[in-house]
Length: 597
Image (cartoon, rainbow, N blue to C red; front, side, top):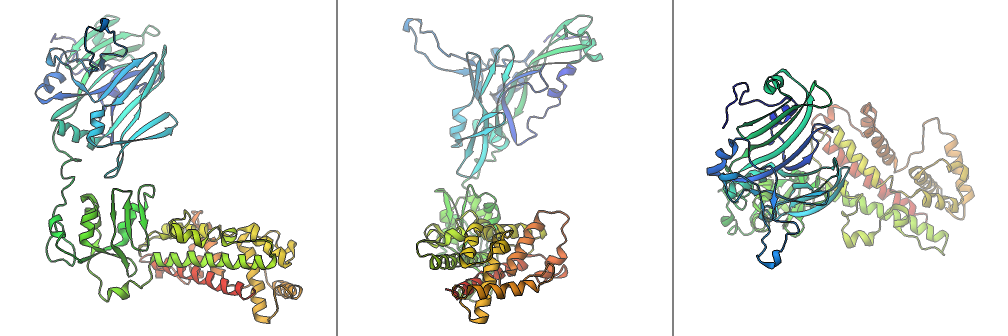
């Protein structure tokens, strides 16, 4: 390699200082191919990744002037030469005499017209069984490749088409998850290197003036890169720099993805006297283990991937695996048959559940299973709400025999649908079935109140309740400004008057209305008549509090029968109580409505 007396071997032109300082492995998603303008409109970067044999990598990194910076192909549209040869499609990166056959690219590429295509190597994609998923973004259509067996998403993310017409019109990029990249290098027993061409224009600095050595243009072959610098033709105070280079990315060391992927190891489970392996689990028969239902949090955060059966605490991931043969015990435990757990799940799932394992609870399991938990409380709320909807529908059908109303018309839920598909599968029901840790804080508590409000208060059909009241004969002007909850409350007030006086909601409508008007006339400002659904108004106020940072919780806590001292260790049990109160309110309301039929 030629020596330059006036230049340091570590010299980098100022316009390309960002490339010098770049750590390609700093982020989870590592760029392995790129056609872009990373430093503004006057810059360009073409980058690819190659596999380099271990015995050659040092020579490749130190090669004077670098090596090839593009993917060479035998096409597209190769000449047939009158059929005198057998065509073999190939992709290589030139490495001179160091590797006569060239280096294998991790992303293949070819040009067609004004477009350049970047495509992740099919061998890499196959190695990890990756499955493509398209997604639109502000920068164009992306292809995400997912490892669905784990599952692990966005192993590869690619925008595969770049267009160049006098200037770069659209960029292209391929990134690969850092751990998969390291794993692949280890599996292939080869190093990975970046090859690149970069260009940028920026201010001319003293070290660049020294490197120019009195010339307008100069070129250097240094270790691993060819540098071209020249005074910009538009300004003598700016420098245009180009580098054709190669840099080290990673070597075969450890295998974070493949190694141990099917190794269950030896785990300690409370209640079992010895460590359990995959083989030992087969001999344990009907041996039960217990885990805290905090184990469900990860799956609850990814509803697009996992299905959760709240009553049992079971989880499934498509047809890949499932945690089954389990049952909720007490407030927040899940009982599992350990043999079935090991039979149905890969190692990472077993290890996840093991983190939440607890000692077997004292008491009789059959009795513990009857204790309320978030699932049983949620189910009670859902079916109580449906029963209320059915009662309202019966009232409407009684008023007009020509209509055929159902609970779905009034509360948006149908018992038949819930029974058929599962009561917990409705999109508004799912959020209230999530596990409740006793130590949850104020934000989580209010977020759950918001979910309850969405299901119930927002689920009440304002138009249908208003129609019902008008058919009964309620003065339209009196309820004109009311929304769903207040309209339901008015119907309940009518029902209470009928219960207290023996009046008939239909035959004695005028007298019932007079009694109602008399009651509300005696109310002071901000007062209201007490009804079973007072807790739903509180629920609405809690939803409002969730949306405001400067909320005052003291009043709301007082209405809940609590204070700051009583919730110092968490608001989980207060949320339990709220669930019970909501269900009880719906049940009492249904009874009142039915007494009017």
